Length: 173
Image (cartoon, one colour):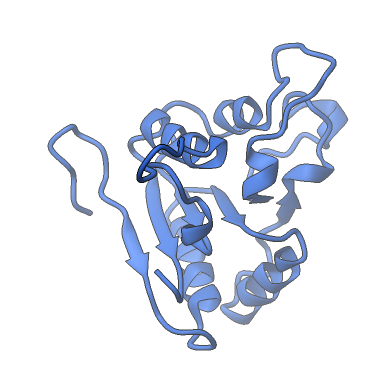
């Protein structure tokens, strides 16, 4: 693993074309990390329906014991808390739009971002997958446009978890 000058871990891009097997490659990376003791992973993508593809890919690489949870199905609150089933390990699957979600009721965990940061922990060194990473666009916009909230949040996630093993995936890079 390469470390950058600021001490954070360098990311890795899987830029294979459509249908080559990026999902299976990601599943293999998650499974290998799980075997090595890094039991939590975060998989971000564009649609909640792709969670079922993620489960299929994990099963296809032999990782049937790794549970996959949809972030949007959790109550706002501690992910490892009683209301959310005491989830302590596995893959949280989330969409880019859910990553910026907020609860109107307030509280300590009023944002999905805060929920995820708390569940992963400040020393998190597991896998974060940015599937269809080109969808986290407009971080550095051109002209008079402003950065998107999604782009800013994706960058903040990486800055707050510098030890994470970041995998970017895109067929359209």
